[in-house]
Length: 296
Length: 296
Image 1 (cartoon, rainbow over the protein chains, first blue to last red):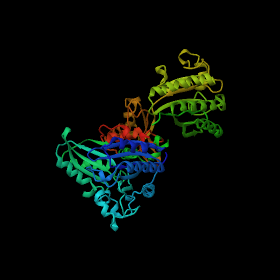
Image 2 (cartoon, rainbow over the protein chains, first blue to last red):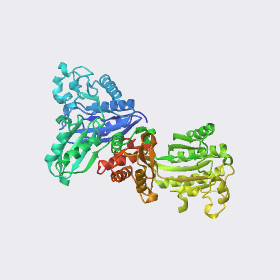
Image 3 (cartoon, helix red, strand yellow):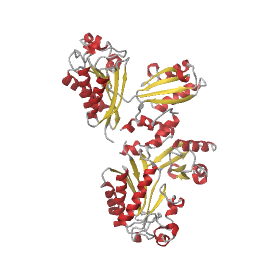
Image 4 (cartoon, rainbow over the protein chains, first blue to last red):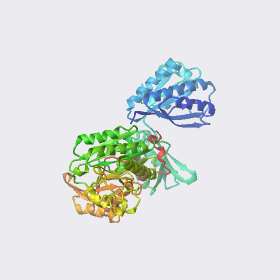
């Protein structure tokens, strides 16, 4: 299997379809890159593009997309509900196959330098690529957003990792980083009681003392009249799907509530599902190379 | 994902390494074919070669391997413990990705015709490609073996599907067919009582009234001093891994016996494991296209 990196850049344009198309075309123009998805949100005025490729191809596609966004998006005119600080707001690299996290960190650093040298766009490194602990969290990095950062960026602690202490006059500033794949995972409960879902969510999420790299909320799914624990699995290696599922099942049991089912929203790396099979079948000495498709 | 067919031809040579190597080289010489494995057994005097490729490439590689085997193996001189009737004894095509069983059946028929027209080797079609119910089972097709078939082949009911009623003078006759992937799967029990493993095996295997496409035996694993249910999963779609696992668990429970673990021996298609994850996570509306690697 070749080296494979996923890249999920977010752009500050969710309304002008021609602009979105041109960004997607920039990604597709790079040989060896496979475009997977583009989701635009009008009220956020933001688009999320997903593609995969070998590391250098993925980096090139990210650069070309950022170049296109810088040409077509003017942050001076941008309005939208979602926090943002640049035409290309954030670019995470995600290891998928035969690639270590360190390689994605290196890729983020290379791209950061290239964005400044080639386009004059300053860059913050975040998550696994962060150079300071307080920059791991994207929300902290983006604090003040485009408008606030014009001034904030002058402060020593807000200096970009690449570039001078000044935003690009129209493209703003971009966060480039590396992180594990994220799986959007929901567990549906056999109850309409929101409090139960909220309590279970509290038990599993890192911010309340649960699994460090799990985010979770309790919500109601109105059209089915059921409560749901809606989860971001930010690292399926440290907190696998089966473990989260089993804890939710055990927590629900105290209320006499069963799990109706669960949902994976969007894409998942296959390894996250193989881990589930390994656990429940109690597989001994299993090696992922025994999966036929891994040999190809 | 491209169309992918697996092919696992068996050759009547397990001792002369130079001959085995030449057969493997014939497979490797076909562009688009990925050689996965070759296992030779001296007492069986037989080699099992595994490769995958797009349908036409897989067929071509099977032909080239059979051509090489016909040149280098003389069935008049062959001795070995395993039943056999040809230099290339059996060639199954197995659908792996984006290929229906019907396409593998067609592939088997095309290859059958080519083996006779190109090499003068007669062919029986078997399993899913069988033209008569009694030829589904390979053991029935091979009855009498090379020596017995010299005469048997003259009978109306033993006429080959391709070729005249006469064996090739040195290469014999070949069975070509199509079948689902086979998963070699063992379940280890927390007991040294062979009878328990035998009873459980009886409960799950098709020949005793269990799952139609499951074969199973109870055995003792001496070096661990435990009993094992050793299983051939001949169709993971009609009898999935999780269902067999859960039935074995339930049957073992009546003896107060637990499952220690299970083992997949050799290769498995990834879909067999994804099905396990889907079952245990109770996934709703899951589509295998949500697996990132399936998009590539």
